[in-house]
Image (cartoon, rainbow, N blue to C red):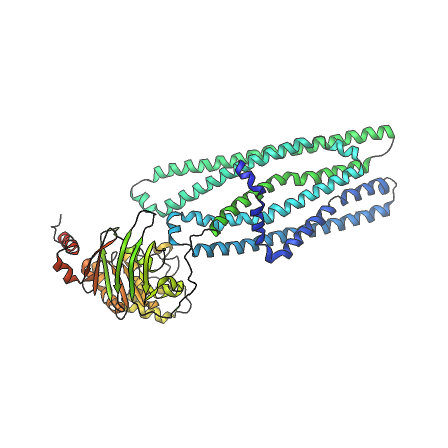
Length: 590
């Protein structure tokens, strides 16, 4: 907990968080002014009550009692309105900062290199964007400014008590060290409990999310009972963590009430003794001091909680700033060459790359694809085929070498312009929760419905889509769960057709399509690649016989290049792949 405690005084982080409040400085200044005003108003009511009791009730001046009562009612109304405005201002300020920070964080995530997503759990980035930034909101709504307001109120009440009667103030505060010690231990206990609860919630969320996603596997292997026992264990840890936090509250609040009762008892004892000795009424003083004690202990009950909120907000801000300061972003070209449409000439020159330093996936790969040419890339799993496409899209930075598009280094292209000219049809098709239309157009309002239908008819998917409940408005659910793998892949073909890219990339695009569906889309592929530079990655060698050029990769190196007939005639690596694949088809049925 020591490291966590130090974060409270990390003023560099606090300054940076408050930097996001700069556009809303008027709200911030207003909240500070309101805190000061509320602090000075706090002891006024006890003073008015003391005056009313000692001077007007004791002397039976009824009209002044009414006047003082009306003044106090007015003061209560003013105090209530000011507290409402204060709470609303701090909450609005916090939500405004949260909105800006969340936008900045998500924008940063959108620009991170794909390699960052390879090594960072998606749940972690989700937590940073949602939960941690929400904790930063608490710095404003329940943290720094409210703590300052509470401390100022405590100071003003104490000043009034010592100004009124310093001896009685000392007597009333005799039990005060008990509350200070109790507050410190309560803060530390709640802090530890907070971390336990947070970790338990994270474990619970991760378990539930993973097992809901993989429920089909759990049920298929009759593992429900085992997984349910694991869930109960994690849920038990979550319950125990919350009980520890509840126990701390259950101890602290009664201690506060006991200390308050002791202080009130000491006040009554001391003033009674004074009244007996001096034969002088102390009613007003007693009432004022009892009210002051309540005003004193009210913020003390919650100030420990607010310190924890502040501490957690600073820790959360450190995590968020770690994302915002991540240097692993896609480099933006200072030239920003942004042609509307490229011709499609692709050159790889001595390209080397590895996802992990020192473990190369590609080694000095060089080849050229002429505009309008269809090139096929084949090789064993893990040979680097898909990596070539990722590098062409600038999803990863090169280790060595150069990739050119139309004789220009792809690093010089505007990233959006580059990717708009490349149409990928991937093996693992991701569909978002939403309608068929939304997934085809990617929610682009500029694409008319008629154009989508035309593309679907070209792929011969229109009739299938119209058979779905709602047709193009059918909700495919999360990850396209209501469609088969082949149907999801066919939708990705419509998407590629619709965006009319200059370069077409088919990465195992027919791997999840049955033979009948493959025949249905083959003529669409032929139409789609006509007049476009196309790169086809395929395990099924029968689908690439018409390719202008076939590049054979093995262990990240180019082993052979040539046409289908030329490579078969060489009797080399491609020929052996061809023989192995077609030998499997000739095996007798079991």
